[in-house]
Image 1 (cartoon, rainbow, N blue to C red):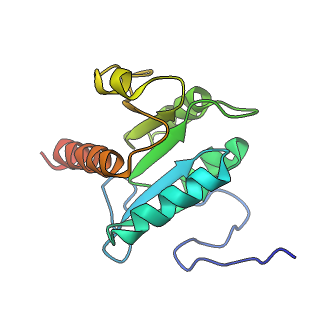
Image 2 (image 1 turned 90 degrees about the vertical axis):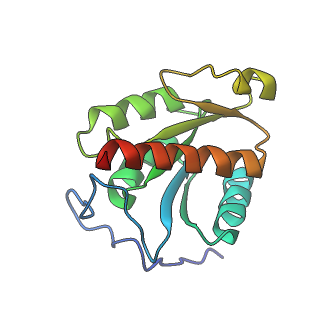
Image 3 (image 1 turned 180 degrees about the horizontal axis):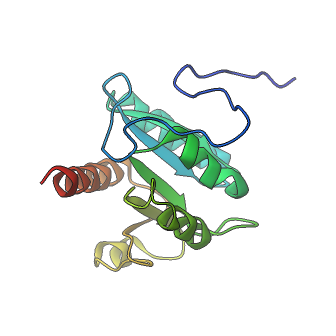
Length: 160
């Protein structure tokens, strides 16, 4: 039996385009930064969501269907996106390109998550399509540090 859980921070899905106000600036919902995690591995996204939300600093939306990732980003208006590289149907590169092409989302920081590299390669400062990445399995302290660095950099860029 599947239960439907409604989240009070997401609008219901009406017909047409939905957007949140203040989409150009880093915003907070109940004092928390919004993080969208897109990965087809439901166990991984659930664990990362729990660990991030446990800090009290983040509100995390999990999206496990790569074909719905862009729509979830449009509705949720994340402050940062964690994006798996390899997924069925649409890969992370395609999703990142779609987000970059959207004027309302183009400045949203993206951090790729991938099992294709080692942690030492990830720490070498190499980027995938201009975006930083972290090696899987994810080290939660490293993930939080990377999220905070990119949110701080994005805020500095927006507010000078």
